[in-house]
Length: 176
Image (tube, rainbow, N blue to C red):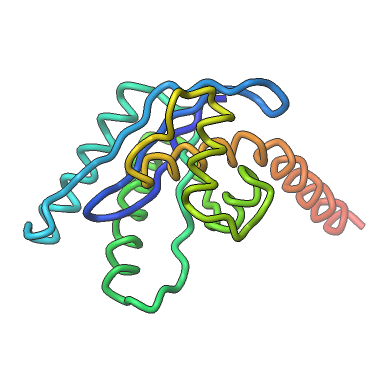
């Protein structure tokens, strides 16, 4: 499975592509950040994020896009920008028919480090170790994007089985 992880943000949108399957060594295919100038008009920034994500989709052809689920923050302005960049990533994937999965920050941290309360340094260290990199990806947004992709690769098989079980249960309820 090839997954594009997206750590959404208007100034720095982390992107990373990981390939592999649960239980086997994973391979990083690319990592980076889509940047926009903080003083640019909002519409221009969103277009720049879209163009950057489209380039990553063109270059890496992922089977799935994993995006960090936006959570409530005290700074409304920050959460709005994050939500807008997240929506752009989801739109780019949906336009191409690529499935999108949302993962909370604590889900990602727990999957990668074993603790949902891990800090950025711990996440970066584990991403480095899991992908056999020489150094943690910089900035942290890039490492977080890789962590999202890893989380999805590891969790997708279980989530798919759960969805199939729920669908089977629902269909049996209709026929009874």
